[in-house]
Length: 477
Image 1: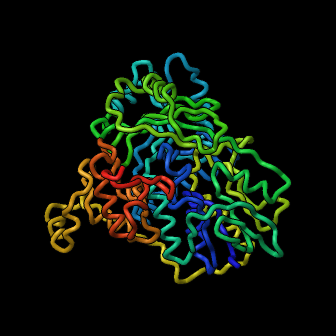
Image 2 (image 1 turned 120 degrees about the vertical axis):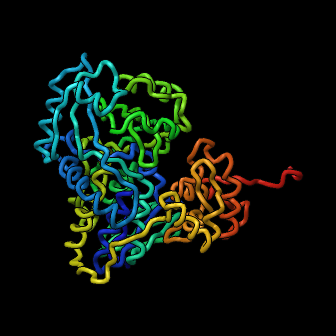
Image 3 (image 1 turned 90 degrees about the vertical axis):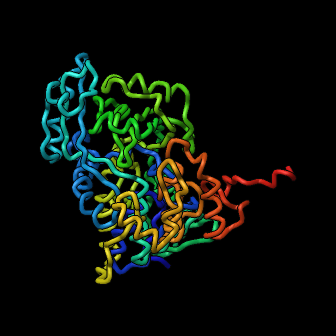
């Protein structure tokens, strides 16, 4: 029997797992997909929010500010991309100044440092491409951008290296009270644990409602995005928000840590918790909406579009803690924005509650450091030449658009919790994320997966066991 079973291998489940790995604990993460980072974490704005827009006194407000403050050290310890680029919440002449003032007041109450409201002249010094209609803005210096994939993998790899077990391709079918703990019925047998942590994203209500009479309800809120080429990456340097509405923070325009430009999201509630399809109307609206805050956004430079789902709980706040009528069952539910920003603090909070419940002791052997995939583009020419001499695989460029070498892909496959499909390689290395969107490099990556995992070419998939790519030999077909 495990001490703790965490349901969900996204950024929240992985953050909790890493915090628990600081203890002497027998823990397991249960993830239904073949890889981690396949749900809400893989498709979001990649923004680390300052913490000004959550209602004072809410869990969102508290944990956003706490989580934001943890990212500098966390990115240093776990070696993932993070940048404090700052953010601007802009107001146009036809919008109420009182709304901007309210955001400022909320931010001060929430403990967000260095907030200030700036006029158009100051904005233009920071962002020359700001829309002509913008009159003032809330400036948030602590805002940041991150790679959500690398954050998720960094937390999970460090947790696994410190003893947490990960069961992938394991879907939870039911959770039942069993003696002093819980029996978790899956497609691959029953897992028993003294405590359970529910970090199941848009499905967290279904998991919670299996054990608790106090029901919760989560709506999948879809957000659609357009990702622009790196030639557009310098169009803005800060994250540009519009005044928020009841559906969210509105359409933003932001650079990414990898040098692209991101525009989105839309906000629409959908019945299908797998409804990550994009729509013509949704994507078509982004350019016009973005133009209210940033002019001349080069929408012709879009290289891909995507959609993600946010887990919106009816009461509008995070649900965190032990269920009242299910002792030993802990929720991390309703984690929508600012969930990514709050993830490190949520990890500390939930792991602390579980640790107190079980009376866990600190593990003196915990190693909080992790080294990410080597990025040769950060090296000097001399360093890179020396690397290639030692390992010629780093001289074989597989993805031309992003200049990703075979050495990086081999690292992605063979490291802790390594990639087993094309999207797993893509999220870890960016092979396939450039202009041609994997048109050139997919066959090469498939060959490497076939050789290194190893597997048959017929078993190589895009994402998960059902997304097969090769179905036969061309002359036979």
